[in-house]
Each structure stands twice: as C-alpha cells, then as structure tokens.
Length: 105
Image (cartoon, rainbow, N blue to C red; front, side):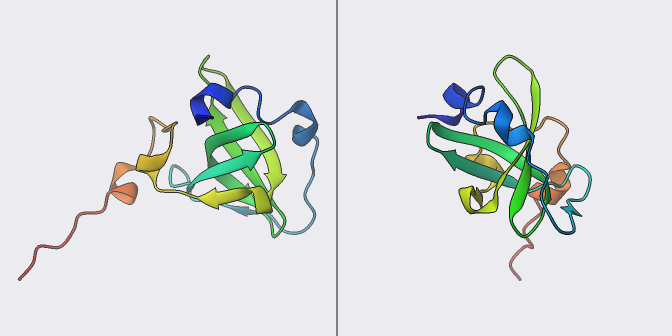
C-alpha cells in the first residue's frame, strides 16, 4: 500500500490516547526527521515531532489537508530521507535537508 492511500486510516483514534512515559525529546523547529510508520493496515509517512525511548509523536497532513498528530510505538517507526517520503512538509528548512556538497579540490 502506498502511504498516501492509507494515511487517513492507518493510525486509529486509540493511538491518540497514548501518553508515553519518560522524558520527551522534541526535534528542532522545521527540522523534524522524516519517518515511515508501519501498521497492520499499511504505512504512513510523517515527521517525528517528538519521541521517548518507547514512542514517537508523528505529524502529517492527509490527502484531505487535515493535520494529524499521533503517538505510536517506536518499534513501528524508521527514519527515511525526505525525498523518499510520500508527504513533504511545505514549510521545511530546505538548507537543513539539502546541505550543499563541497566541491572537489
């Protein structure tokens, strides 16, 4: 399944009620890592807005333009390059994601 086809239904309302234990780490503003979350019903590409040792707070916009924020178990999430994501945040800090490559001497 493609992420864009499943982003509305992959993470149910029950995952929103998760309150992770332990300290929460937040990503730098507009520099959140892109991640892919796999579930029994498909995958969703998102940004990791925050995380603990056991959970990740996903943020993404679905095909209807609705914003979603859901905590999900960290074991279901892995980091991906921005270019591999089916969804891209239009407000990204492009200098962070696309650093210039030094010229060969």
